[in-house]
Amino acid sequence: MQIDAQPEKVKKFYFLEYFYVLLKSVQVFSRRERIFERFLALKQEYQLGESRYKKLTTDDNIPPKRIGRYEYTFNQVLAEAEEYELLIDYGLSVSLTDRGKEAIDKYEVEGSIAFNRFLFQFMERKYHAFRHLLEVCNKANPEKHGLLIFPIYSAYRLGFERSEIRTSANLQEYFYALQHQLEKYIELHLGKRLSLQSKNQELLDKLSDLLPDTPSQPFEANKYAVILKRVRDFWLQFFLQELYNYQYPLSTFDIWAYRGKQIGVFHITEVYPGFRGRVLYPLSILVTTTQNEQFQDLFTYQDNLRLYLHQPSWENEKFQDEFYDALYNAYLVVHQLNGSYFVSLSSVRERVCYNLKIPEYLFDEYLGYAYRLSFSAKLKIRISLEVDKLPEETKLEYLMRPPVMIDGKYRNIIAIDLV
Image 1 (tube, helix red, strand yellow):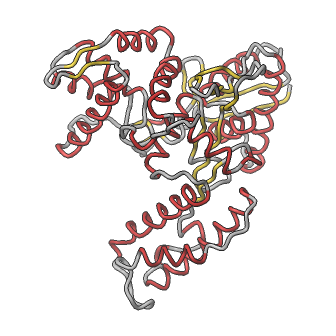
Image 2 (tube, helix red, strand yellow; image 1 turned 120 degrees about the horizontal axis):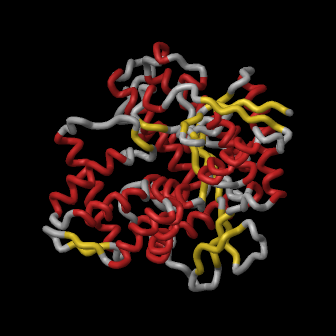
Image 3 (tube, one colour; image 1 turned 90 degrees about the vertical axis):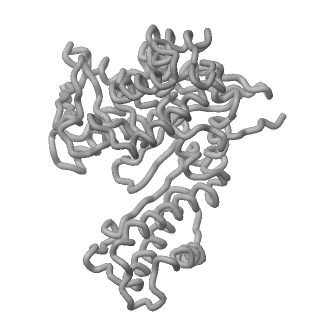
């Protein structure tokens, strides 16, 4: 039986907490304008941005243009919530259904992970998008368990100073260097030898409206950022559609990948240590059944295939040992690269999640257990966790490397000693 996947029909937002924020707003108010006001306030409280990352800043005075963007997100969340029968939209007023009330209870009693898995049932029943993406991963790179890579290299990373890029010929030199770098990564990570010369020419043709006809002629400096964005999106789309055969827009892929990360179906990151670009890999399998206790049954399809999440239990002593080993080995690698005693906890987390194929939320939870045990003389390692700089102390608007909350405190650097 063929499963009809319709990932492109999803509404345009990333965070599943938006559903909770909306439902809580409808729980308090019935009039649409009051619901939107409450939605905005909770959006701020839960740091929900329009991008793929949590917001660090708050908007005391929201500009009219941004209000329009927030109204768009509000309407998108409202429409999708109604598709899942979490609420009923009457136009000027909105009311919760019993399912919507159940969703609120799920979040407040069992937590956000249980809430996300509750929503997963309705998303997957309607769109089958997670299964589709999982099958794409497995077909595209079976040798590396579905790993997808999306290299992103700026001109600076390839040795080109911005001050030296003034003409069309200068840009073409960068494009050719980027072409060869991508060819190397495709061979290294996907085991394929490809020439991207024709694709590079296609890119140049697509940029003809932004580049002067004569190679030695300067291009308009105010178009530089637009040119680089087109270059980045062109190659991302090439990897996605032509190498991995995901025949939907990059924006659709992003929505399902980052929603899947929140549920634990996938892991996706743009900050994997030692790699420039995005990395995505599955944390789940599609089989009819499994006896492996590390996998949790999440969804059954009409053709009797089931989607299982990799959710190893902390009660499993063998897995505990695997976690300690992976944690210490990841620390050593980052420590040797940086040469400092305390290293980035985010970099360590990325390596552990990849090696053990566990979601970020399990790493955070299990690191807390390991941290407390390390002071009881029961482990061969001693873990030290500190905060280098709090997220709100940075100048970034969005948080790409979230810290770990341990014992009520944020931590973002780690050191490990053998006892």
